[in-house]
Image (tube, rainbow over all chains, first blue to last red; front, side):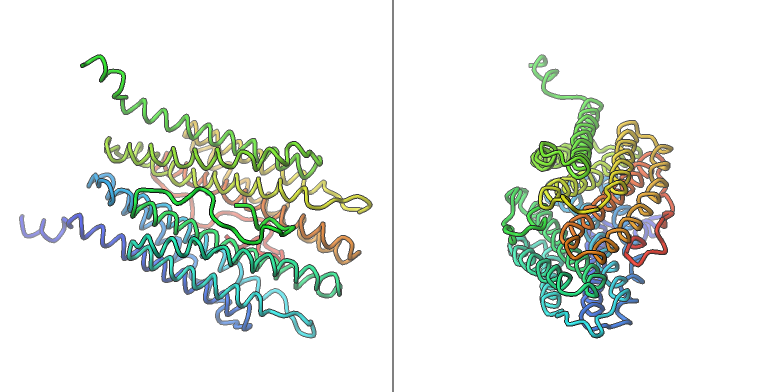
Length: 238
Length: 238
């Protein structure tokens, strides 16, 4: 039945486009989770705090779907060169996106577990850090969907500033804790939130490296420029 | 020249075995990094504290080598079914191993940035947690090299106990900080160390899920049993 086979056997290009669309969708959801995490922490937005973790199952499902499609493409279509690298990169990038979604959900949940009423604790550093992380993620997802190596390189370099924010936050929060024991519990949560934003930045950088390799066939340098080198924290660790 | 081609064209099985050997080697190095991290924190072992980060470049290189070989196998050999799943799993597992190595290096570095002299802070919880994490990692690497789904399932279930340790540690450390402001700085480091061990446990679980899928073609349940549900921390977050 030739009519049937036209409908059921998709072309290789169509399947590759479908994989790209699934990646874009997964990226969009994770991006919204990070935006919700930022709103949950810096604007006490309770709706956002609920929304970020609620999207986790959808992200997990998309990761599995992309993987199943990638395996199908690898097995049945024997892609070569650039396409092969793109499919392999997709397998790795979905892992990073899934982790970013996890961190965002974790931040959102944590935002509901403490309050800063009567505490003289500024969230301005965390707000700037969150926005920067969000912006870098948006740009790297653009780089993924447009297979843009230059944009990937820009994002890769921009993570240095995220590390610097983290180092500053770490010091500021420890100072608050020293000043008043009542700050210890909320600041412990804020420390982990800052750390989670920093980790989101790391995974964003991983994605940038993946895109660069998929597009060019070359690796970015093994050691990336990092900020916060003078910290007592592990901001220097990758 | 047929003699040459015998020497230069490796068989598919040989290449697959080579990939497995590289995974085993990568697993072995990461295992030793985690052992060094545990020794650095709980026994003030300075040599171990230096050794764990020093192994990072080797792990990164092995990740890239496994990936290059996996891509080669996918492109030139068109593996099917179980072999295909194993190669795709290898691509994902190396990412988890690399992350585990990072966390171990981060723990080792951090162990040198504080001291507990004159502080009444017990490390027994952290010691037990570190040993458990180390043991689970050892078992999951066995599961990888032997493609053993049953062992993978056991490790997957054992992570619950790691989460419980983390929750207990979190509470204990916040209590120390409340008791004496001089505990704040070291306990902040210990909090991150406990968190990093917990994250190593998470990645160990990811590897177990990958092995299970590679061997059986089925997924473990999406939601894994977790400990520490009653915590104010994010131990419940994945």
